[in-house]
Amino acid sequence: MPNARVDPYANFNFLVEIDGVTKAGFEEVSGLCVEVDVIDYREGNDAVNTVRKLPGLVRYCPIVLKRGLTQDASLWNWFKTVLNGQVQRTTGSIVLLDSARTPVVRWNFRQAWPSKWEGPHLDGKTSEVAIESLTIEHEGLELVVG
Image 1 (tube, rainbow, N blue to C red):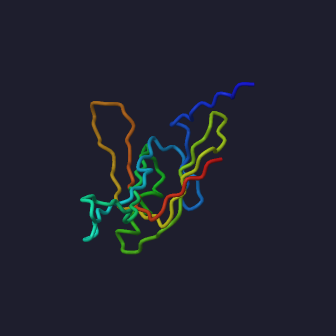
Image 2: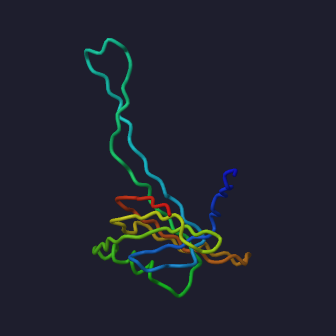
Image 3: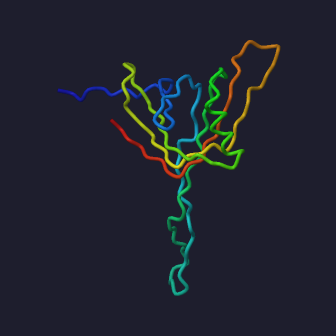
C-alpha cells in the first residue's frame, strides 16, 4: 500500500494563548524564529589557515501579534505594566490548527513581556479594519508537534 499523502497545514487557522487564556481574532503572528550566533575561532598553532565555526549565544526573535482593534484592552493593559515599571512576565503559545480545528503544532514561549504596542493607522479614505500590534520579547521557544 503506498504512503498516504500528507498535506501541509494552512497558515490562517491558529490561536494565541497568553498566560493560559486564548486570545482569538489575530490577523497575523510573526517572529517564530530562533538564531544562534556564530563565533569564528582559530587556534594559534593551527597548521591550516581555516576558521572554525562555533555556536554562540541563542537569540529568540520578538513575536509580533496583529489583530483588529476592539474594546478588549487586555494587550494594552499588559503593555501598560511595562510603562509603569512593573513588568509582568508570562508564558504563551501560538497554536496551529488543522482543518477540523484540532491543535496540531504548538510554539510555547516563556518569560514573555511586551516591548512595543502600536495603534492603528487611521485613514478616512479606506474601509479597512483598524489593526493594533503588540511586540513580545521572550526567553525561550519550544516547538511541540502532535
